[in-house]
Amino acid sequence: MYTNLAALAIFVFIYCVIAGRVERMPVSGPIIFVGFGLAFGPLGLGLLTFEITGESLRILAELTLAIVLFTDAAGSNLGVLRRSEQIPVRLLLIGLPLTILLGFVVGWAILPGLTLIELTILATMLAPTDAALGSAVVNNPKVPSDIREGLNVESGLNDGICVPILFVLLALAADKSGATSGFHMAMRLVFEKIGIGLVVGLSLSALGWWFAKRYSNRGWINEAWRQVAGLALALSCFALAQALGGSGFIASFSGGLLFGALAGELKDKLLHTAEGIGDLMSLATWVVFGCAVVGQMMAGFSWRIFAYAILSLTLVRMLPVFLSLAGSPESTGDKLFMGWFGPRGLASIVFVVIALDYQLPANETLSLVVVCTVLLSIVTHGFSANPLIAAAWRTQRGSPRQ
Image 1 (cartoon, rainbow, N blue to C red):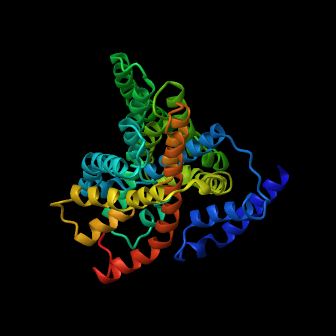
Image 2 (cartoon, one colour):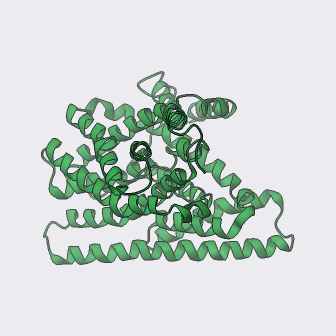
Image 3 (cartoon, rainbow, N blue to C red):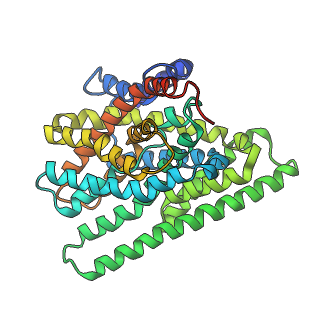
């Protein structure tokens, strides 16, 4: 245990020192994190020997995703979003269903042996984009603000939307009898996940902001504990919604949106520590992913799995985005850019771990495809982010629009 802790802590410290330089390089943090896990894991030097179970991986990934969703939503520029709301609305209402549909069709053509429901489950798992992996784009001021906010909101909401869809499909897949009770149970599950998630997220954030503002004005909150408040609120939204049977991801994102709108100029002070903890947990998640997951599953990758992963990151993502933005004022280059930067990450990992609990016959194939797709996404999107941003807005406009 101490060897693992020492290696991970030293790596974290070194990365903290060079993080600013890494952000200006054609390589992303997650590539370094996963690479470190592979290099120092069982397939490499053997200094990292995490004995991690599916449950512990899910907890780590879920908590990381919850904090990232809350802080990203709270940091959203709602003024810009209101002026360009058609981008995320189109991506979510048109692009997301088309992505799932096209992912199903591609899976049917490439992955024989999966049932129709299992193919739809796979397409749903890989439909959400990752807010953390997309940070190189959504946090880069060179990218026009409407595109940044549109992609940020899309990545924050699409996993929350896919949660109830996934649970419906898993419930139907697990209902071996095919009775209508399974469908009714699935529909009830959808309303519970969405409704409870929204109520918990909005209620806790409104109440949390009321307490924070009231007692901050009275001087009851010192500077040290003020920094912890945002983190505690993010975890409260997620955990309470999960405990009540709702979607913690919907609660995290909706709560973050409301909290950011209410907090105004104070949100930086309240969320600074939460953002740092989210970054640290993302680092740990990707190190564990590289060490304990990728290393064990790479031997199972086949040409069919690679083919589906490549198509999932290109055709399955880019064509629906392009079609959903048809008739919008965005240029062809902007549409292609938004289509390409749909990285897959934490949400897909959480989804596949959830599916393992249902013991589907295709669990091994589903896991291999998701891990392969996420790994390729980390590499391709990580290496291409900064170069493509520099090329796109140097050649298209000379300077980004605001």
